[in-house]
Length: 144
Image (tube, rainbow, N blue to C red; front, side):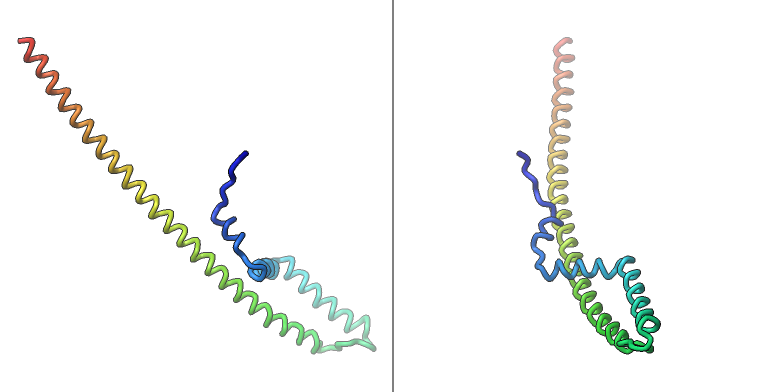
């Protein structure tokens, strides 16, 4: 059985509210080419229906005042959604920066510990070298 540890992103995603997830989905949807294409298509269909198909009985004749009202309401709603999404993105960036900082602090502590261990090992090697040198001198002096 494997013990799956959650990444920071998975843990963060699990804490999102329904509204935050909805804002992300809407932001990603409105900021895509399929949305732009479907929006242009909708406006063309609206104009075609009201200009040619229902020329005598259209519900929104040219200059399309109802369509203009819908577009204005959509723009206001999009502005609010984009502000919510931008605020969320700022919060995510701040949390990631804090996570990076915490990781760097921990890495610095570990590097300092490794440097201290390395320094101790170098000191031990230096002492062993001195002892070996003294031991060789003693053997050389004892031979005389």
